[in-house]
Length: 335
Image (cartoon, rainbow, N blue to C red; front, side):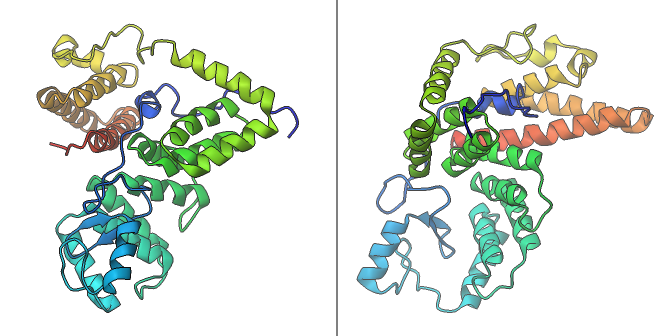
């Protein structure tokens, strides 16, 4: 392409609460419990179904090289020999609500490993179950499935949604995928904004793509970087200019009536809920959830506004997924 243009991409998430957190500092990857070094990748690890630990591939390689893999390098449980034994251990961990076990079994269904037949539908079901149990990485696999239409009808909006949640949680592969999509659509500024974050965090493919863009489009590269720098120096605006949300602000729900909370598509409800999640205000969040339930019950009883009912249900589903991603990024669990 000659003279790559810089269009403003028509993105359904621009200006939403998910977009608001997308370019925050990347949270650190988890440490390997053996070498205590950060995992080289969120999506490349060795899961141990005997103890539920995730280990870096380097520690696994060193262990198998020194001891022939006769036991788990962490808990020292005897190594599983057959596919059936490993499958039973994974099922046991899933019954204990282990999100990583759901993710691992889903990957086996997707790759026909562990003696399992290829089943994309079952894999996607397990990935969704992993998300419900707090797995950030599962968002990445769901996003890729919708992006590449793997076992499911391709859906760009759903793909962006899950890839963004994974990127918020620190999955660099998801941020790279978002950058690649933006680059392919001609939005160089958005692509470089993603790449600058993932490359700084040590993602090799992001650094390679940045070097490639710089050599191919040097003028556009410099122009986009200047625009990114200018944007980063500008204070972030609230989603609603008429509502000032401070980091330590509480009691928002008591200031607004039910009519104000759910007017304009529930904008103030979304803002208040997001603020409660960020500040860890369980009481505020519980009040908003109660008001949401009362509003849904009223709409169902009246039955005169199915559009608003569906919209509020979609908003709450998005908010709950955002809460899971935010808590995972902070190393917390949902109350």
